[in-house]
Image (cartoon, helix red, strand yellow):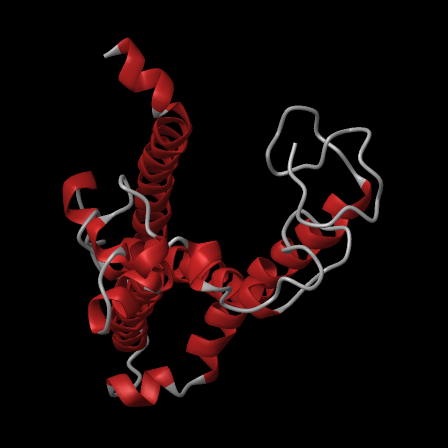
Length: 230
């Protein structure tokens, strides 16, 4: 177990942070939801319909907030994976070396006849299976993005109609909600922050350093060194 923890410490660390964040998001979201319900009930002169913490976890209010962030994160990394195949940034650790853009040769990718003895079995085959495995990372990341984006749209739609009903306003269809300014305002404010973060990292890694991190070049590496990690 200690060996497993050490060898998986990066993923375990971020998994723990994610779970702690989700728990605290649920706690404060539950308080916010009930506060809003109490305020609406007071204005309407009705008895507030407060929910328990367990019930809140299955509300659209919580689901929409959670999925809204998940989909933008997976969009960010899906685009980064694809963009770095062809696009370059001189001096950045987020870029391949200048002149090495593209899908690279079979020898460079160690596939087909160039596969090693311990290479994954699907790297040694041809046809669809090789194509699928060759693109499996972005396919899975992209799939998670589309699923979480769809979940965001459904939970956001449900929450939108619940608020509309509380204000005696007409409900909208799912397509109507997805085409609304409300949906795209929430979506785009997340997307632009992810694009800014990736672009900033690509530029900052040219000039700034973090000793010992593979996200940074060695401290003494020249600014022009591209695709070099510490």
